[in-house]
Image (tube, rainbow, N blue to C red; front, side, top):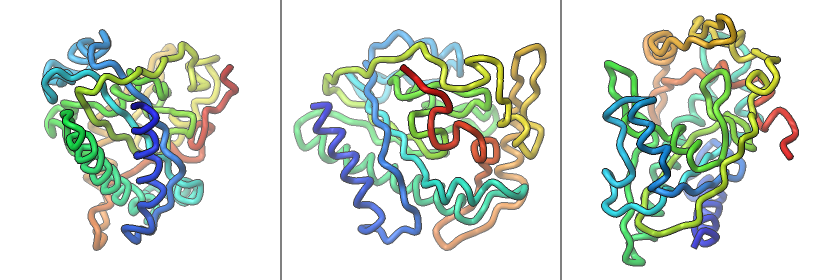
Length: 259
């Protein structure tokens, strides 16, 4: 069943540009599977907040979580390197990728429920507490549990196709084979203390590095995204940033060889 789901996701992403007439091109998705009973899920209530949901809170008798990362093209990533505000191409890609994820989740929901199983319908973004700036379902944390990547110094999620892209997930009561997590670090700083380029790239001093510890100011990050220049496009708002993710070694790939 894992292979069938992988084929559904890859095929949908590859055909989306033509079917929806988007500006955005995407690279092939990175896909993983988590056991809904993985002991790391309850720990998210401690690490993120007590309101973070368990898979079984969203789908009764949940067995698995399907996770996918949809990476942006190199052209989109490169377009966002210069300037304090995000590029038009970056903004449009974020909007269109969120739409793609929402449509893909509906597609998977329909395919899964047609087989007599249950599935969730989770939004790609905006599912967070606007006061605390904490999500009740963190796609990044769930992606970590699924084994498709690791967190970088910049708090972004690094996959084999880098960190520039968007994540989505679907919970189901289908029993799927979980992806194996690795102990290897993908971030160069976490691996050997080098790089730190993402910290320098931040345009709003969101990160402070003190005694090898990173302090992340959520409010400053949120301010850069939502309270500064937010252009309006016919398809949505350009409430994005991404400066810490572009022009760095982990933008498009894991920046070191993993055995």
